[in-house]
Length: 171
Ligand code: MG
Image 1: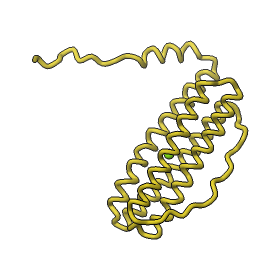
Image 2 (image 1 turned 180 degrees about the vertical axis):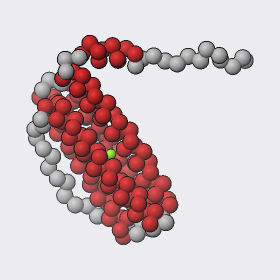
Image 3 (image 1 turned 45 degrees about the vertical axis):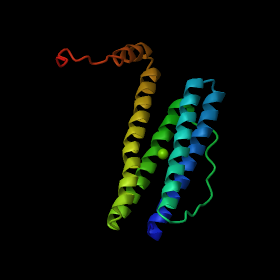
Image 4 (image 1 turned 90 degrees about the vertical axis):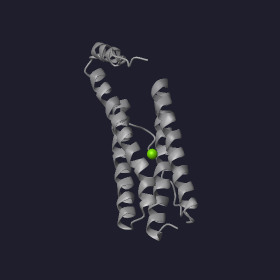
């Protein structure tokens, strides 16, 4: 069974992940209104991932024989400061999520609940990827904002290079 404190923090994290899904669905709808189908799709997939995260944590609380305690899911914003402002908000939000995940990991370590620590570490590593992906999007949007679209196209082309080992092992 989880400690009361860990059960509470994990329950709050379920809420945070479901709020994330809500936020990204709202952002997806906003992108749709702007006619940006690709951005809307990315955000919709992001929302689906957050639902999966929340559900996975819920299942873990149950698996550990504890009861989740849920609170209201807040209303997300309806409008955003353009696409750049939107992704800045995504980064800011994910940084907050990283902090709450790290706080749970610290609590689990303090309690020597190594199983919980290991469970939460998957999320900690996932957050590294989440933040890197959003930073990547913001970098590209900055190039577009500076009217350097050609440089972006050129860079995308270089990104497709695949390493082929020139010295494959002899069979
Ligand atoms: Mg998440």
